[in-house]
Amino acid sequence: MPPASRRGLTVIYTGNGKGKTTAALGMAFRALGHGWKVLVIQFFKGDWPVVFGELEMAKRLSPQFELLQLGKGFVKHMGDGKPFEEHLSAAREALRTARERITSGTYDLIVLDEIIYAIDYAGVQLVSVEDVLELIAAKPPALHLVLTGRNAPQALIDRADLVTEMREIKHPWQQKIPAQLGVDY
Picture 1 (cartoon, rainbow, N blue to C red):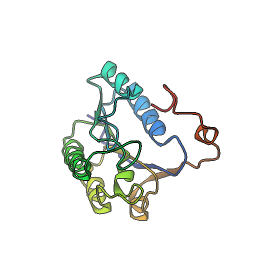
Picture 2 (picture 1 turned 120 degrees about the vertical axis):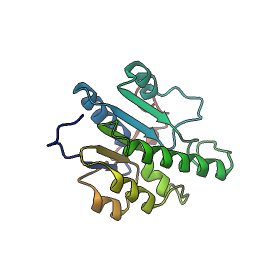
Picture 3 (picture 1 turned 45 degrees about the vertical axis):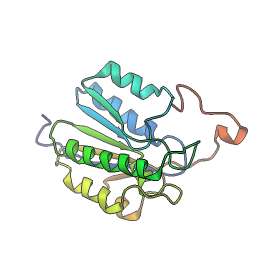
């Protein structure tokens, strides 16, 4: 159990630059070093034929570190051909799981990876700002909650204790370099 003096923070990593999930996983790694129980819920990753390094590491660090890939991939991008309802259903289930786990009292740190994308990803909406605000409101006082994704709405920024914006200056995609194992996934 966390010390009574710990004040759980709400942290947002947003912006168009690379590093949002990486920063969140860095916090998770640091928390694990202190013996904390950590959960990561990924709202888009999942159901892809890609081996994600963070998922493989979670298997090694279980049960102290859990990672749930509850998404069905990026909607209408990267070769997605799934019906929109399948993505919507997965997002609803991820929200339900997040609420349950946030209020369980089991975890010291929970990362909701890509949840901000789920609010509005290229005009596609899987969850609402209100859904995410409800998750923040449900957070026990000692739980640290991390949200990632581009274009954080002002309402979330206003509720957060820490907001960092990643800004793209240069990216390998600009040079036609594909995503790299161990760096991007």
